[in-house]
Image 1 (cartoon, one colour):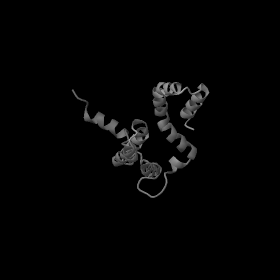
Image 2 (cartoon, one colour; image 1 turned 30 degrees about the vertical axis):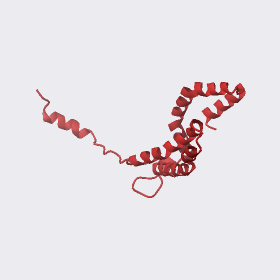
Image 3 (tube, helix red, strand yellow; image 1 turned 90 degrees about the vertical axis):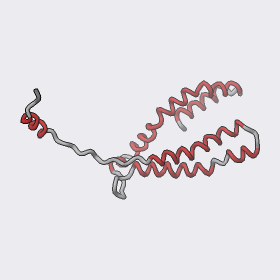
Length: 149
C-alpha cells in the first residue's frame, strides 16, 4: 500500500535541493587557550583577598602577563569572525555597518552580564553595607556595572 513511484517523482522534481552554505569551522582549541589564560587571572583577582602570605601572593598575582595573551586571542577571534571564508578579505555583509557589528558583539554577552550581576547583587550590596558605603555611592557603582561604563 505504498505511494506509486510516479506520484513521488513529480513532487521530488518540484523541490529544489539547496546546498548547505559553507560555514567557518569552530576552533575548539581557542576556547581551551582562553580558559587557560583567564583562570589564573580570576584566581589572581581573588588571591589578594584570600591570603596574606607574601611568596604565595607574589606567585599568584602575576596575571598582568596573561591579560595581554587573552587580548591577543580575543582579537584573533574578532578578526576571524569578520573575514570571508577561503579568502583574505573582509566579509562585506558583516562589516557593512560597523555600528551594527559593534552592537551585535555587545548584545551577545550583555544578557549574561545582567543575569550574573543580578544574581550577585545581594553580595555586592551586603559588602557595601558592611563598609558603610553611602547609598549614593552604591547606586552609582550599580549604574556603572549595569551600563558597563
